[in-house]
Length: 94
Image: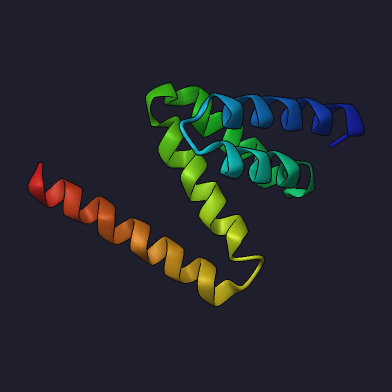
C-alpha cells in the first residue's frame, strides 16, 4: 500500500474511534496508536466498522484490547478466547 492509501485508512480509523463511545482518555490513546497499526489490520477494522455501524463500539473496544496486549501473543490469544466466549454466551441466551 502507498503512503497516501495508508493515510486514508488512518484518517478513516481515527474518525471511527472519535465517533465511538469510549472514554475520552481511551479515544486519545487509540488515536495515537492508529498510525502505527499494520495496514492489513487497519483495512479490516475500517471494513468491519463500515459494514456494521451499530457494532462500532464493540469493534473499537476489541481493537483497544488487542493493542493493549502490545504484541504479546499470549495476551492477544486470551482476548480472542474471551471474546469468543462472550459471543457464544450471547448466542446461547438469544
